[in-house]
Image (cartoon, rainbow, N blue to C red; front, side):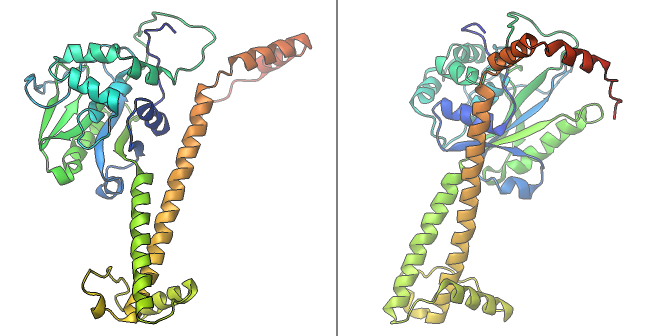
Length: 361
């Protein structure tokens, strides 16, 4: 692969998350969505934007008007790089989403290209060493490189586009279009409700002949969210323990607290006690403090389990990405040479040729 080429990369949340980190962005991750229902999407809140992968059709007509006004606040770049539509879809969200920590280089890039027209923004992306290096870090080792091979008629081509709310409006950002497409007004606190039917419409448009779709969300880092929740529960638990001790009462064991909570729930009592507000400590009984402490212990156990799952998932992603980057070609070639030197290669090849073809399932 030449220095200015862009490799194809796998559509995978672990790949995209590490790619984003390689570009210096902090505090975000990518998650795959398997359902468009509100509950599934709400579980990932806050969602900065959606990335949709679909099979591209060369002759497809799209009569929807594009927004060509360069004065608005939408960062839109034309796609001028082959194989980079996934990275460009990611950048379309990161460079438009408020509250994302872009890092120094991408922040300067955004400011530098702010007044550029879409085609120059696309060229700026293609000339960014930071973006190209992060993207090409996932290049697969190939024994033979065919430079300059273009897409052929029988090739299956897939394309990534982005959906993101900007200033109260929902936009579709497709680098192959001449500008962003405004899909209408959307409430800032529930923009996914506006995006859901639009994505479903696009799926229905292809579903008769094509079932290979992929929908991913760029969201806030879940481990950071759970760590903040854990710290908040721990502070409230320590404060509650202090209130119990200030009454001269002993702290029950965790088993005793759990039994109190189960008993309260069995009796139909409201076992969920809200944290004690400042200045209201004297109005809460010791028994209520015990229930609050039991509730906090339960919440801590839940959030710690969620945090462990996230840490395990990121560890698995790191392992998978190491394997993706590893060059297995030398091992395979040397293994074939070893089989040939022992006279075992051709018998295995001939045996494989003699096997009857497997019937289609």
